[in-house]
Length: 317
Image 1 (cartoon, helix red, strand yellow):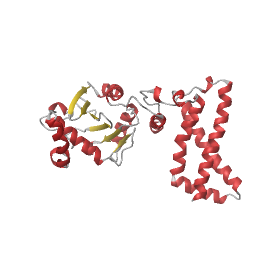
Image 2 (cartoon, rainbow, N blue to C red):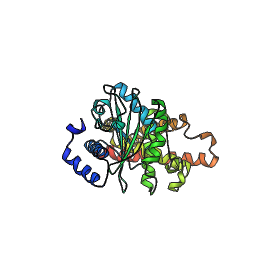
Image 3 (cartoon, helix red, strand yellow):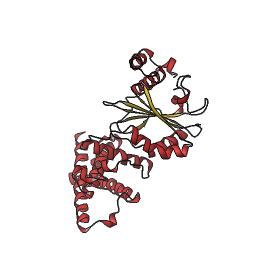
Image 4 (cartoon, helix red, strand yellow):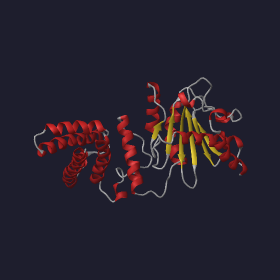
């Protein structure tokens, strides 16, 4: 999908034309408008605060995606598309903008586009692969190339990328509770997906790391995390719901049904707590007696809450 051939040039040119009239370099104006048009094409796949592949990934591409996912920590308002070589190889800057070409022809190109809405809309473009001569980042705003970063190697690129994203594209102010919750859940889901501790660039905005931002305690924050992760997973998994409905039908009375669902939910809660312990996200051995008591109370309360929600869903269908 070459910019000059594969995109709807009338829509691109309308935006680029305004930027050029405002004094922007025509090369950067057309390139940014074209990249934004690509993001629009994938908008149905994207989720705020998450890095999302816009095309099915092969085995090698999954490994590259996982390396990027581990490092790229997004504020909850950002849209981010991971574009594998099957698409990215044909997203080519104009020949007149040689400084934007980071990978030789016939070499695989991975691209990540991150877009920030708001008063100062900004496009953060990343092109990289192990074969890239200079993997790096370009930052565009209102048709202007604000700056570029080039890295000596793939390894240096990965190590420096989190800081570049944090400094140049993040929403840093005016977060409310839903932003803190979304940011924390997105971070934890990255850890779950990869099975390891992931980069978090702003622990002060995570309710798990800084419970006081939502007027909470360490134990309350832990069980809020567990509830917010498990509740949608349990509610929207149709195969799971059907399996539990079958099990419930085999039970002779409601008490047995309740017990079956409760045991199932408890297993999932314990799995998450084990994950938190194994990744050393919390050192449970440092809990005070008061925190241990609070832990037991919150475990029971969260278990009841999740189980009740799931039973309502099962019996409603």
